[in-house]
Image (cartoon, rainbow, N blue to C red; front, side, top):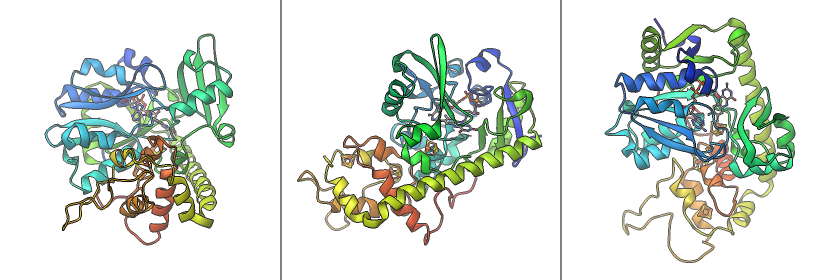
Length: 383
Ligand code: FAD
Ligand code: SF4
Ligand code: SF4
Ligand code: SF4
């Protein structure tokens, strides 16, 4: 019987899926099982579009189509949470299962706090996350650093601290540290992120800690909720998933890797925030003077819901008129999200003027965490 707190190695019994999947296919098998057994009406996952730089969010109701979503897309910088609110009615009338990175998970909790999504109707299969690389950066990096045409690359992976690409006739790997020292590599918010194992999801799955003959062929699963335990237990009993207890040495290694990632996150926070601290507000004012007021940073933020003035009915944050907007436009937005920014990076990633918005909001949130509860990465909601 699987219980909350268990740590297991898991892999699929479907050979076709195992060949497509990232580390043994347990995640896709669990999503498929939940759909087949009608525990959910649909699976909301991510699949490869035109190429490896194109991660497409996909709603699937036919279990036969699920194998197309297997695999990890490290250029998939998308955030699934706000899409649940925007396009799936906040899962109010639809039960869904979905893979979630740490930021997807935190976004769902923030939206639930604001009654924008119904967590009772969502099964969260967490995936550990070392970080994602913006598609534009990935293309430039592959061209300039790997000296390979980005259009011929068929697969990418992040393994043992390297970004590795495969293309017809070869493969190449370069250390992430080296890439990041030269301005490539993971998005800047991902470098600072410290939610590496999403333990507020129902299950937390990843390759860290899988050692011995299962390395690369199984996923480490930490069972984080009763809901997750039930799903894994039933899928194992039905024979779609195979499991064995995690190797104790593997558990130690996983802890060490997570600890090393925290230290790296702290290093980037120190660097990014120290660069900012001498003149935070001046820097914000200078950088945001490029703003064309497209509102993308508001539209795509999981915690940003413009508040209306009770007396006038006008938005307190978004006023029409001049471009660039008065700096107060940004100051109000930062104040509005100061205690809830989850550092998902969507505002920065999707800003057409390349304004480092997440760096600002993350710096403000971390400062606020000295005083506010709950801290970033935690939630008052418990699974
Ligand atoms: P699969 O059966 O292949 O299923 C993978 C699932 O991930 C699918 O449902 C797919 O839709 C979903 N997915 C793919 N790309 C994205 C995306 N960009 N955003 C959201 N969902 C996505 N594990 C670690 O231990 N350390 C890491 O540093 C690490 N980094 C990761 C970074 C990313 C961006 C992702 C997506 C995963 C990462 N993982 C990491 C988890 C690991 O790669 C595997 O996903 C996990 O071990 C499950 O393997 P699997 O074969 O069971 O998954
Ligand atoms: Fe992964 Fe964190 Fe970046 Fe989200 S913000 S993609 S969880 S590293
Ligand atoms: Fe301005 Fe960028 Fe926000 Fe658009 S996304 S409103 S350009 S700061
Ligand atoms: Fe994500 Fe930016 Fe909103 Fe923070 S402000 S939650 S980084 S979109």
